Image 1 (cartoon, one colour):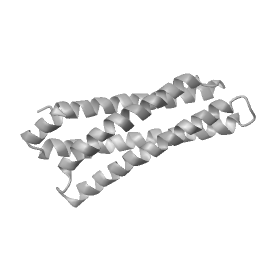
Image 2 (tube, helix red, strand yellow; image 1 turned 45 degrees about the vertical axis):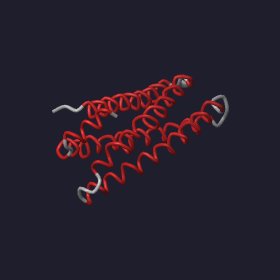
Image 3 (cartoon, helix red, strand yellow; image 1 turned 60 degrees about the vertical axis):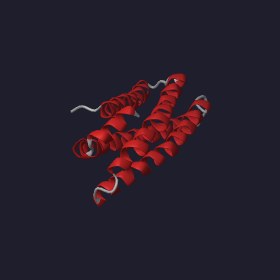
Image 4 (cartoon, one colour; image 1 turned 45 degrees about the horizontal axis):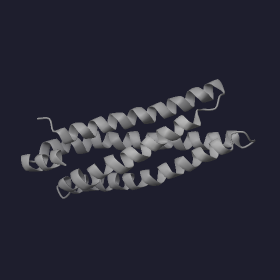
Amino acid sequence: MTHSSLNIIRHEHRALSAMLRSITLLLHEHRRHGTLPDFDALQAMLFYVDEFPERLHHPKESRLLFPKLRGRNARTDAVLDQLDRDHARGERAIRELEHALLGFRTMSGTVQCEMRRDNFEQLMRHYADFYLEHMRVEETQILPLAESVLDADEWAELDAA
């Protein structure tokens, strides 16, 4: 049976994955061509990464889905604890990325440009790798578990939310 709440989570994961991959590809292409990226576009892309998962997507998981899976076994609880820590870490990391982008943009016409570019690109790669792995764990461990253990009433509550 397909549950609308899981479809929404999976769709949101695909959208975030596409955005993260687009940012890293954009940076790689500008680096390869020796050009500066469109800072307005990068800022808008990071705004999406901040607003969408941090403010809309993660609360659905941490407040609605994860509590329904807690207490089933110690291993699952450990994974859920790590995913919740990841959500908190992601919020700090996006602030660091936004600050690094501002530094890169502000210093792009100075001798610090390459250092600022390297810093931003490295932080972006780490952030993208971190979140892609985070979503992989949710998709391969948590969502299948939810499909196998939640009852009809729990699904109705999740789908309604």
